View 1 (cartoon, one colour):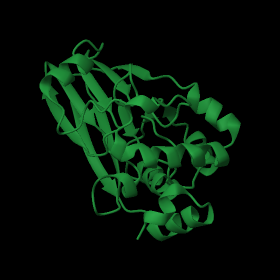
View 2 (tube, one colour):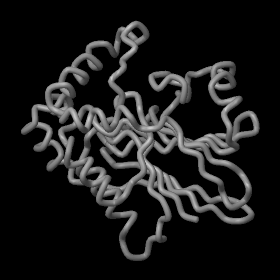
View 3 (cartoon, one colour):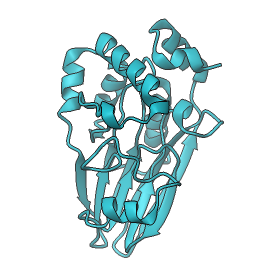
View 4 (cartoon, one colour):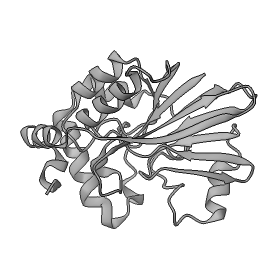
Amino acid sequence: MYLAFISDIHGNYFALKAVLEHLMREGEPNYDRIICLGDILAGHGGNEKVIELLDEYQVELVKGNHDGKYVPWDVIPANRLELVETLIKWEEENIFPEIRDRLDDLPTTLSISLEDGRTLLAFHSNPSNLWDMANASDVDTDKMIEVYGDLPGEVLIYGHYHRSHVLEFDGKTLINVASVSGYVSMYVDNLARFTTLESRPDRFVIRQEVVAYDVAAQKKMDQETNAPFARNWD
């Protein structure tokens, strides 16, 4: 069984397009499922074009913190408050209500039985609190045990914090698939990142990959839609 995971598109249409075309190109495995782990819009100007592309490729969707209408303003860090306010205001004015309703109704987790008998649980960051940063490099052990310790799965795969990693922790394998949007990926290269997993009867194989995309075209789209990230490309 071949699985592909993407996350944190943030409306970056051209990065998403490059990743999906890469996954479907000749010579790649025939992926049984492509799963997006949230933060589908918010930031770039792709909006309905991103949704159409996800539907075209039959991508399964899991809810991220920017996909819901609820925002816990009281716990947003002060250094991120202005950005979140800008994103939310732009989303309310520029994303079709039916799309926002659809994203708000997405499930927060997705469970998959792997061929070696283990269970994979896919989610955005913390299934009980989508805004929680549970997998950043500065999170302590107690916090990770609190969030991940009792989750029903031996393999936990998520996004939210935009750097890729594979960790063994408390008897579980933790996988961060990183961000499709090179702009928000916390890397300086503007490459789109994703993760694939091949499930075999005796083990699974993880690949964390990058592809280039048309940065200039996305920048133009952001400027034309006055998207929040348009002003920061330079």
